[in-house]
Length: 201
Image (cartoon, rainbow, N blue to C red):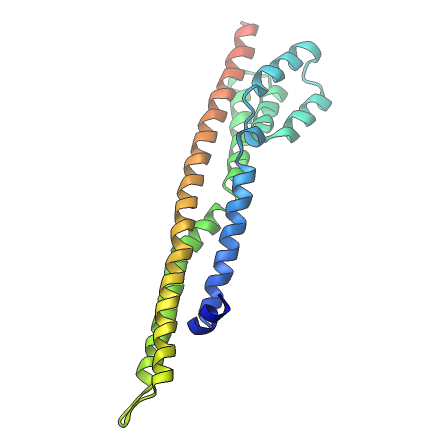
């Protein structure tokens, strides 16, 4: 591996940094976007049971809001359960926007890496080509410099694609995952509003 890095020249270091960041973001998002962490399936039922048994007391709401992004949305709704349906929905929407922002954390950076990595590889390719043409003299070229220039061009191109392709795939998968989670959270929030306001009518 070290030999490849040496053959690729200094442009490869930016791609290595991009690959490290990409792997770190992918691992973090895999852990953070688990259903059990974001929107537990039975959270709404447990929340309604707790609300009917003890009401929307501050301690229960604080624990609910800290449990998950869906919990934060449901807690916002319960805080306004005694208000009108419109006010309750508005509070849920505000909490939902904040939750979505957290769910999308680091995804713009991952998308940027997926877009920039091929360009960094192209930069390495251009630098390698410059070395190749710089090695040419009227009396002939230096084979060692020529070989190093070719290595720089090809390794950087390949490594740029190696970084970009998985990053782009992960970015698309995470975007789809966030969209699914948001739809699920919206459905759970609507159920909460309907259940509480139907009980009052």
